[in-house]
View 1 (cartoon, rainbow, N blue to C red):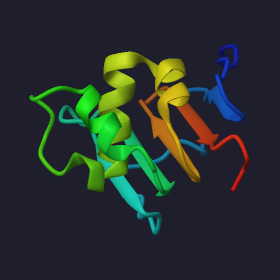
View 2 (cartoon, rainbow, N blue to C red):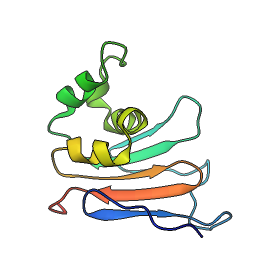
View 3 (cartoon, rainbow, N blue to C red):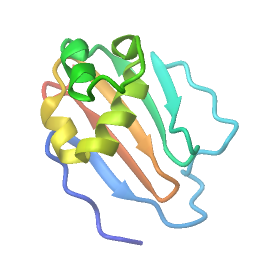
Length: 116
């Protein structure tokens, strides 16, 4: 098993061993606020809560960002993490939230600094 990743904010980030039973499968259902996968299907995000600065975050992605992105926080999270990296993305988020990011090897769980 690999070494845990550092997190810029309170939360948990780690690496799952291959074949771990904790790894999400393709048939996972989610009752959270938002669920999205990357275009290539390799990364998935589940998001619950609210991003109070979603409009500002969406504008950080420039004019090529999909329309209405501020209303789809899991998709917004995937795009931000892809462009800026996890640590920088965590520093940008404002509001009460929790999320999970899965890339086939790593599962990153995070929540807002107050743990709301």
